[in-house]
Image (cartoon, rainbow, N blue to C red; front, side, top):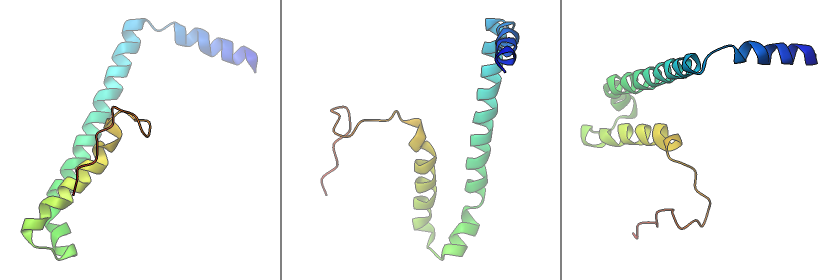
Length: 92
């Protein structure tokens, strides 16, 4: 068992740093492509979503905004509760 992990570590270290950077870059590009494709599918389905929810066209922008906010929620760095760097709530 231990021999396998040592052998796996040796084979992983055979890749040059430049090769590992290019592999990471390729994985990032695939992930970004999939995210853009997902957003485009939702954008092209907005008329179907509007008819299914029976909402007027002026309220349709809230659907796209809510979807984009939910997708980009993971993009912001996590904050600790009570941290000074958190944005203060907007008064109503």
